[in-house]
Image 1 (cartoon, helix red, strand yellow):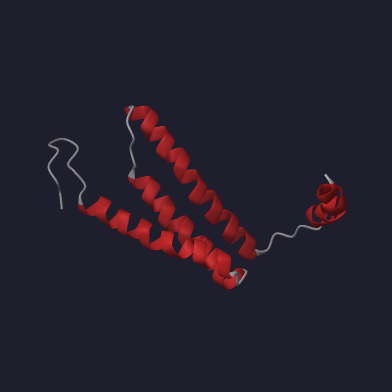
Image 2 (image 1 turned 60 degrees about the vertical axis):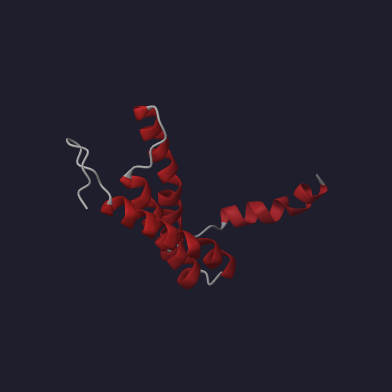
Length: 113
């Protein structure tokens, strides 16, 4: 409790003097997109009553990761943020590529490659 009481004034000060910059907006948008992908996945899993990774999940992953990476590289220059978002960009892009390449025809079930 000592830590909280000692730092509470600085926390309140930071919240009172919050400024929304264009790069923070990029970062918040990336965070919103990257987080919302789980709600999309949850929706489709509940809808089909099995685990589903819809195409929207991968698009949100790629776009959210790219925005967060841009924020951490240009807007903040934060190596921790860069490293934590660098790998997901490639994984999400690869999964999106595989998903698009192996789409199945909704009527016949045949791969459309």
